[in-house]
Length: 212
Image (tube, rainbow, N blue to C red; front, side):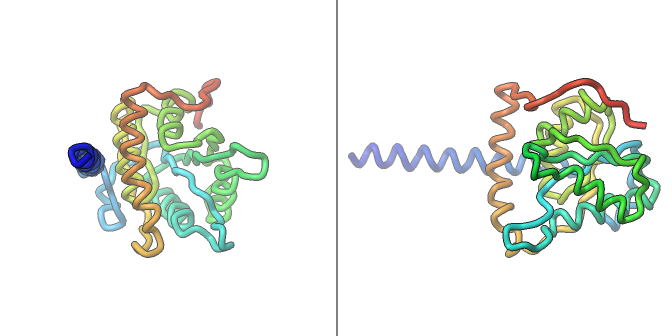
């Protein structure tokens, strides 16, 4: 019985080390492709920026700060001349839930012309958003817009899918506000690696859509 307990402990220790290793690998692989407000002037221009979706309104009725800051980051890049078009990608799996349309509306309210914004309604996961940006929207080069921890994973996926991508880090939130998200991110990176090993494809692809 004691031997079984030790084997179980060893298994979980190795599993934890593997999860931590994947987490660190994803972060390290993105270090030279991340930009922030203080390095914006040095940031190369790309024709299209991919804004990764998230819910706008939380269960408590408040605006999700992750969402708010991504919209602000996209606006900042467009105003700085670092992008010509925005591709907003998110979940539209139900008739009463439409992340891309909300992002588009708020970007238009922020002053970005409607004809400069395209919607990806099947960005159910980061993997779907990245792969679809290439195979549906025809982008070989991208600027990804999200928070830093999310950008790191998105850049990892982009590189694996042959996309020449860089990323702009939207303003982050406090650890207290985003603790659950950070824990989920560690697990999401391991799930991402499993998807890669299993050659997981997006839920939907579809006909090509030309941007611009």
